[in-house]
Amino acid sequence: MKQDMDGTAKSFWQSAGYVSWFTADTASAVGAALRALAISLLGYAVSGSTIAAGWLGTSSMIAQQVASVFGGTFVDRHDRKRLIVANAVVGVLAWGAIAVLLLCDALSFPVLLLIAVLASGINGFLGSATDAMLRSIIDIRYYPKARSLNEGRDATIAMAGSPIGGFLYSIAPWLPFLASACMYAVAGVTA
Image (tube, rainbow, N blue to C red; front, side, top):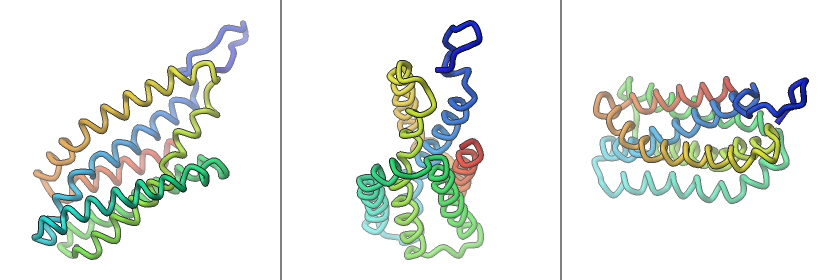
């Protein structure tokens, strides 16, 4: 925490860096959550196979989890702000491309699988940059409180994201992917 002129500690909410970080991290989490269920629904719609749809979601999650194992070391050695922006750009391009391909009725299952696995892998590899950046934004004394706030927010987003993504999918199949791309754009701008 930065100190005011009179020596009193400012709340981390009053820090411009924290508010920008929180916005970027929240937008990134919302972007990932909105597409979580919708990707399997779309996989079924494009392939006509429940097995293919299941493997699409599973492959995306495996790519994300495996990449996250190696991403932590990479994130610790590079500029976190740039990594957050790079992750956001990939999210905008990948999920925006799926929305556009759906609107043009030009999406095939292999293309969907390729985009979903690559984007999820990159998100897993670079996604921890926001959490790592938190330590450099606020005073270590306030880190536990900020971290618990972050965990609660992530849990809320994870619980609400899939139903909201499914609802958006029911309106138009491209809508959750466009919303996800927009959330990644917000994350990139606020980073």
